[in-house]
Length: 338
Image (cartoon, rainbow, N blue to C red; front, side):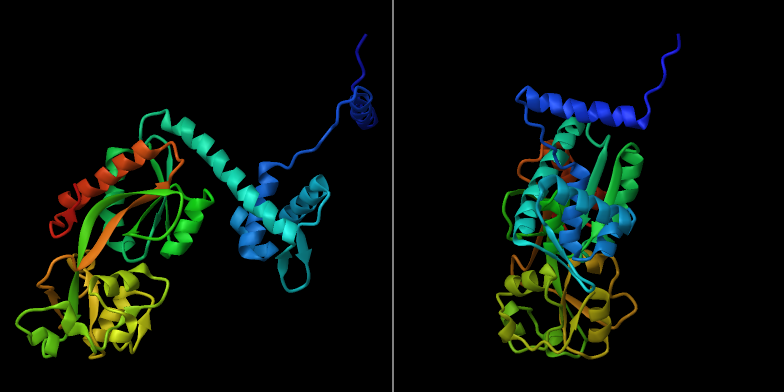
């Protein structure tokens, strides 16, 4: 005799009766939010917009919205306030997001723990790099990494330091390549090399004609800097023992390339990291590039990762790999930290 396949009604009845039996046996049935629902909620919190959050999660807006509604139903709580113009989290929603981010980060660390048990550079590395490093280090590094470790899948995100650190803290990135120090908590860092600053100015300027170049000569100078948010701005001023009020800032740019062109056209002077000058950022201009005649006028480049990550050894090897790439590509002016 062939057994008849259970229909939808039968399956629903069995599921419902199972819940009743659990209650009769004194067992409380509680539904739990899924990781996907928590991820979608965190995306809504980050973007404050359902459409943008859905795009970031690579799902349709209807799918994401339905998932948030299901999450609110599971938790029997209102997490999101919706209107035609914006999306706001409730007070409880903000608390849930904070805990959800911690949960998702811990889950990422579980995955990382298993990846760390394998040979280094055999899995995925999500690397964050700041804009004043990426174009000067990544080309040679990425090519060498593909040749030496073809099984390694490296995903790169370029952004400002604070945005990268935020992404690191919530588990969206594994490791950062940036200028140190950078204020944050629950992270470890590894210094890789020193990147000296060069003064970029026109040949007939007072600073270009001075016999020796000292940082104190920059007081009162017109100094072009990157806009706020770029750590190069703060590190350059700090390395030269300057405060912003000590110099005149006629123009703020979003890239070093723009600043170089402005200075080349007679607007002020600027400081360039040596990795940028080695890459030829001032080629084709009349700019004079002068090193300072005093020590420690530069920035330190290094890696940063979460303190609890189980992949510390792999990231240390990545640091050593970056150092070797810089040496092999002929950038001897960068003083590798031992």
